[in-house]
Length: 97
Image (cartoon, rainbow, N blue to C red):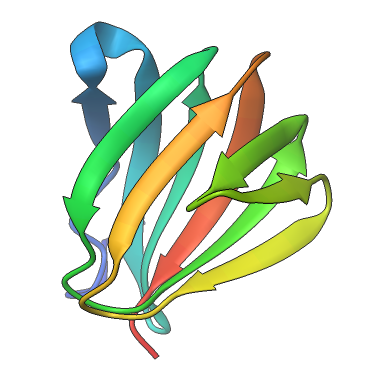
């Protein structure tokens, strides 16, 4: 099956020496990732665009707010992104509005 222009394939993202990893793709509705977080604290910097994060397994503190499965957290563009996890956790993220 041929790929659409919005589908460049799956991108593997590795952060913090492999302690946070995600698979990303682009669809008609925008950019998305599915990721796994190892226990620890991770500062990602400033969001370039809005991020809609859904914790799908475990618990992640996002910018100090505890987010358990299945909860959603919105990070506006221009805001800091900090994840904290005490155990392995998984999330999805959609970018933009």
